[in-house]
Amino acid sequence: MSAPPAVARRTSPEKTRPSVFWVLAAVLVPAIGCFAKIEISGGEHLPAEGPYVLAPNHYSEFDPLIIAAATWRIGRAPRFMAKESLFRVPVLGAALRATGMVPVARSSTTATAKLTLAQSVALVEHGRGVIVYPEGSLTRDPDLWPMRGKTGAVRLALAGDIPVVPVASWGAQRILPRYGKLSLWPPRKRVQVLLGAATDLSAHRGDAAGADLVPATDAVMADISDLLGRLRGEQPPAERWDPAAHGQSETGRLEP
Image (cartoon, rainbow, N blue to C red; front, side):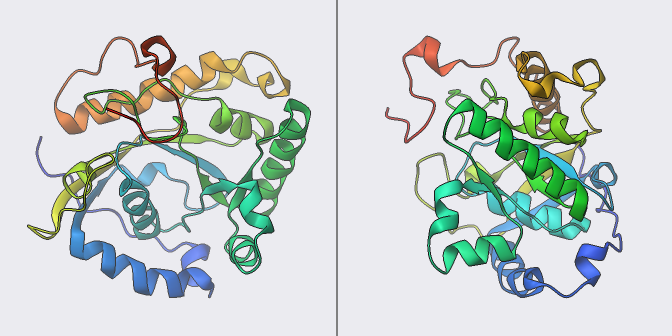
């Protein structure tokens, strides 16, 4: 695959308005650049303003840093989902709230639905975006293809009629293999990031209230897999890896 064009530079209110992200970007973006030469294409698919859900594949503990740096370079502030319990930790909770991170509910279905609706309203009200990993954890697929997704990303998006933008990255596994050790040499390994058009969820509008969100999630995962196939120059598997079918836990460290 030929090298993607340079990412289009856009002037976004999130980058021109002073915030804590300026400080974080000044420190983290150059640091990440020591490990990775990030090539971004499809940046025009990320809305310059307004709410969005950015849905990446997850195959290395390092790839969230890649996605964060790429999001900032495109022109938006990289906000992630974080466990709800972390927001109750002194200092850390204040930092998470200050940067607009979004809490993940791990409680009852009713509580989750209420929190999801509140999160969607807040994203729309403030015109913010959030990065949500649909897989929920590092892929269990032996070849690092996206595995079966969870419904959190589409639930959040459908609750507020927010676009879900699929994105795939590839190359971070050469910096930090899944559950492996950090590779420092050679520096600045090539990492590609490819964003696609927002997944068409029009057939699923209204489903966030409790209907079957699996088909909508499958549509997002299919788009992510297709993008990753383009980066890898390979055809994605016809069926995504299902950890339960292979006796694996969907969370926690993957044991060999």
